[in-house]
Image: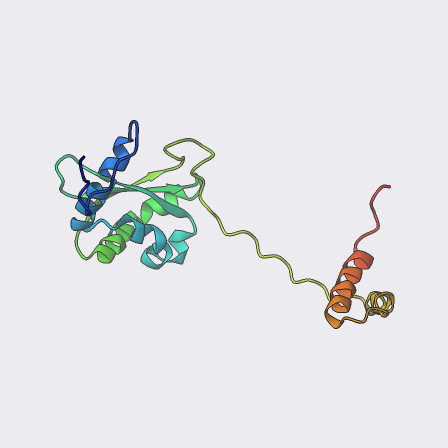
Length: 175
């Protein structure tokens, strides 16, 4: 009978993906070289500024064969690519300032995702929703009278709010 050492995880049955076997080792080597990619992804707007973060997202950090610096790939839309191209030295300097040394030697722009068109689209901030209009006092009064017989205050307030929404919606539906 063999006993598994306490610091070693027991492997399951069948084949195990190579990525799962090497994941911890690759992460430790990458972190020892200063490439905390998750930090760059999670704090992207703080690293490069809100203006650049609104038009570009980091896709990957690739390591060259020589190991003399990495290549940062940014995803952007076609219209924003020339604006981003002019700011590449500034972006590289800001990212390297985040790492503390010249970790990134090149910055490359791509206008599509490396895996396809649907997966890697730049996330733009949506247009802010307009503030809701104040409710009509006549609608509020009607909703209040319809829910007036309810004894529970919380239930009455909820029914009043529901009544206001139902009574104030547009009537241009075809029946």
